[in-house]
Image 1 (tube, rainbow, N blue to C red):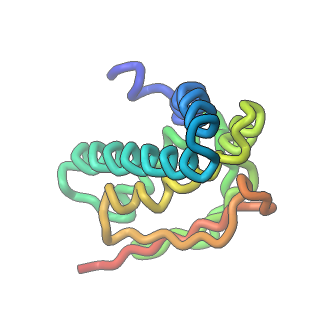
Image 2: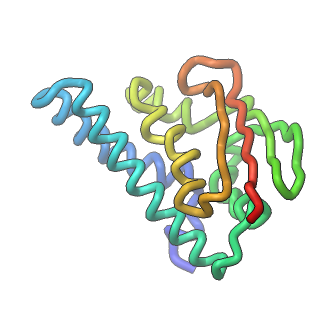
Length: 158
C-alpha cells in the first residue's frame, strides 16, 4: 500500500490546501474573488469526481450505499470528524457531524472563506463520481457557521 493510500484524508487535504492557497491568492489578486472562487470550486469538483471514480473502480464495479459507507475510514481517521448516526439502512444513511477538524484546519490556515469549496462541496460531487444513484442532501455545515453538518445520503435502487 502506498503512503497516499494509508495517509489520513485530513493530511491529504492539508497538503492540497497549502498549494491551493497560493493559487487562490494569485487568482484573487489578478482576477477578483468571484473568479478565484469559481476556479477553485471547479478544480476541486474535478478532483473529487476523479478520486471517487478511482474508489468506485476499487470496489470492482459493485458500488452501493454500503460500499460507499465502508470506504469512509480515511475521512474519519484521527478523529477528523465526530459523527452521530441518525439512520442507517440499505437505502438511507443520515448522520450529523458535530466536530469537523477539516473546518478547523482551513480556518487555521486562513482559508475559512473557501473551506466550503475545498471540502464541503466535495461531498455531493463525490457521490456523483462514485455511484450516481447515491444522492446527498445537506442543509448546513460547520464550515459555514452552523452548529453541525447534517448529512442525508439516499440510495436510489435500480
